Length: 342
Image 1 (cartoon, rainbow, N blue to C red):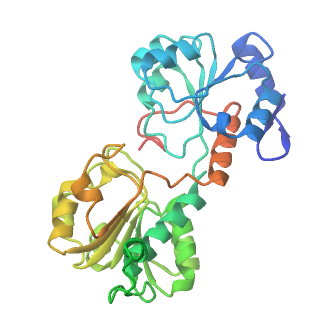
Image 2: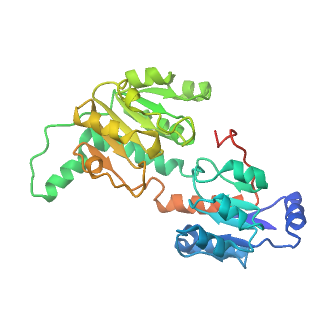
Image 3: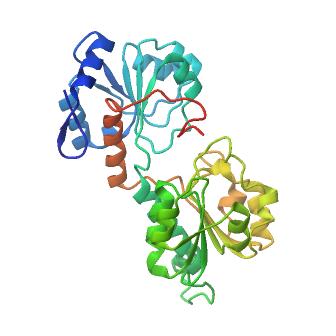
């Protein structure tokens, strides 16, 4: 039984075919798709239906647990977006055996619940790494050159170029979290002649040497970076990491870019630092609560606020949808404290 990943059909291993027949008691598992990506991408939807002709595909976001339960009842595999699967939902879906993720992050899933029930997770790390790293670069450059600000002035009829801004070239840029997206950001920074500091609990010595990255502790990163770009996952160790105390340790006049998760940064502390000038500018694509309702922050003159659009390019949507398809057959039982739930 083949699965499609990219433009070419790839054969699934024989043992996986046997596992599906053994687990489901029939040749074709019952697949339901709650991710909206497939409804928006006809060519990828066609790939899925060529593989699973009876797949049930949603055309809207599942906003309530009752909707999820009703839609998935009787199905063994769910190809999902970012909706949450609580104990109530999983208890109501005893047939469910696999959650195949189209998302880059998996912080909306509970590994303890899935592990307890033996529910498998399909997931491709770094699936949107190019899209998010490009957006991080966009925010860095825009913050430092005030391009968006100048465009707003132009729309108001103000022609005079702003006597403000600075070059990224030659700056010290800190990358906090040097996983898939962090590495791509490092690569994109190469032509700018910057000094790159890398902070991660993993040892990436070979990559750091290849791309001229200096490994530093969090304290060094905060003290020395003129620009910090956050690429940390949301976990128990990163939620609230950029607290008011940490904000005091940041290099005065620095720029902060967050395309990771909003819960990593204390937004009230960030606003105070923007107001007193300790932080010159902030570019955020993610917020503690989404949709964000913090106009004092999002309307701040030194903030570029975006609506969580890091994975919005069509190419990224296609990659994420196909990663969900891959997860139907390539999956594992997650566990608390084990990557990516650490």
